[in-house]
Length: 529
Image 1 (cartoon, rainbow, N blue to C red):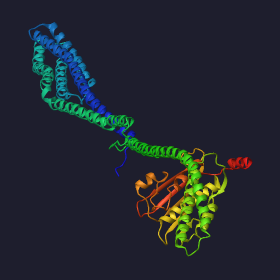
Image 2: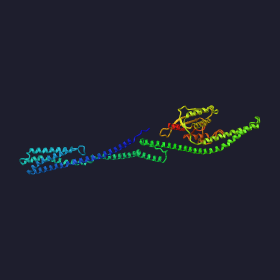
Image 3: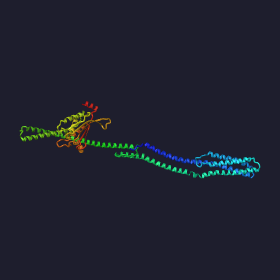
Image 4: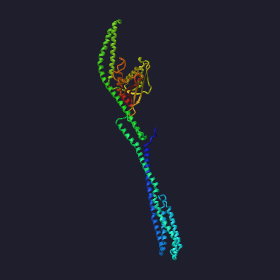
């Protein structure tokens, strides 16, 4: 079975994707910003060198100008020359200090080795010039020839100093010129990284949207669609989710609930059909009962007259000789008339019993003992010889019933069961308590079950089993009123009777449900008695 993933794990995964996307975009942004910042700082720092280099170049120019004037014979220019050497040294110190203050080796074109080497060479030239000047007496020079000789010795150093000073700005200009070549790889890498990050962000965003649709929106839409279909009465609809998370568990619970609804609906439909048939049967029985009562009362009087006349004829035929053939035939006919009259009278009595209405007097009755009494009586009936009645030895149950009427019910059911089985057949009887299916207080009812392994019944027989005068026995072996009377008795007691059969030759089962004798009810019945 695939491992279930909780929604919170999926949300954490989605949050991780968002965090990765934000981190990658942030990293790309910060990389570009900091690269730009480093470039600007590097340009700013290198640009700060230009004024110092220009000041140094200007000082060297003034020194050369003073040197040229001194060679031309201007005595005051010598003093300016010597002062210019000092000023140039101070400008060089400022330039070197600027180089040291803005030392950023990790920035673009931050290599200042050439500038430092050139500054050291300029310092060397200044030291050489200063040494020549000191050897020549400084500003207190002697004759013109000595001044001229000293100035001539300084001239090569001044030329070198001028050349070196002119090189300083060229280094920065060359570095700026080569900047595009130096950072080409860097900015290409940065551009590629930016595009890669943007593409990855779009992919991650698309993946997050697809996962959100698959994990959240699609299951919710399917759940809503399923709810609407079930609400419309389509209880056969089932949800199929492959998310393997709480949404799938909710769908499984929804399917289980729908299946339960379907079972309840089907059971209710079955119960409604069953109760409808029972109501129709009860109405039919009530109608037949009223008709039977009237017919029985009307027929009883003619039957009594027929029986009385037959007895009178029989008494008149007694003096006739026993060998008289005509008398014997007449006597046999009179006996047949009497037997059929009494048989019709028995049928009318059954009709009266069937139609008799009124309050049933009930009392707590031990059903198992009542069944044993009826079974013991039937064991001595000759036509049931060889057939066995098995009574399950279980705890007896007290039912609030009329003992005589329930004994009639048990007698009818056992006689029908014994008639339906062959020789050596068996009838099983059980009495037990059964919990009420819809009782909130956990109440019980008494259940009497009579099962046989006899001829069984078809669906047609089951549908008409409790109707009056319905029988499948041979002509003259039954009136078809027995089970109708049983149904009326059980219904009057507030119970139910159900008949089931797997089919012809597979036996039958009758299940009678009766109200149980509770303690409070028993006490009230005893006081009423």
